[in-house]
Length: 59
Image 1 (cartoon, rainbow, N blue to C red):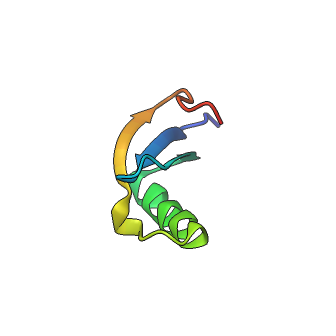
Image 2 (cartoon, one colour; image 1 turned 90 degrees about the horizontal axis):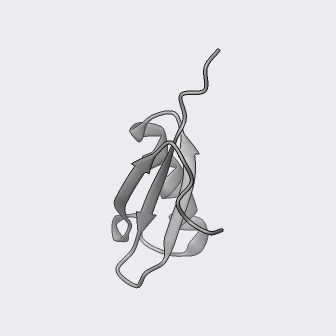
Image 3 (cartoon, rainbow, N blue to C red; image 1 turned 135 degrees about the vertical axis):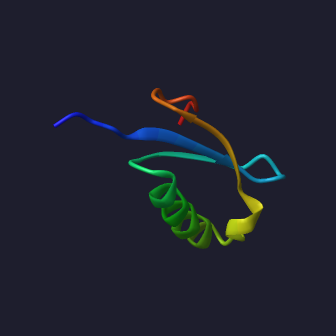
C-alpha cells in the first residue's frame, strides 16, 4: 500500500510552528487541536501555512 501522507505545517501569530504528517486535512485539523491544547494555545490561533510531500521545518 502506498504512503499517501503529507506534511501539514501550521503557525500562530507569535511564530510558533507545528508540522506533522497526516493522511487528510480532516486528520490534520484533529491533530492540530490536540497539539494546541497540549501547548496551552488556542487551536484557532494556528493557521495552515503549507501542505507538502517533504518535511519543511528543522525540528
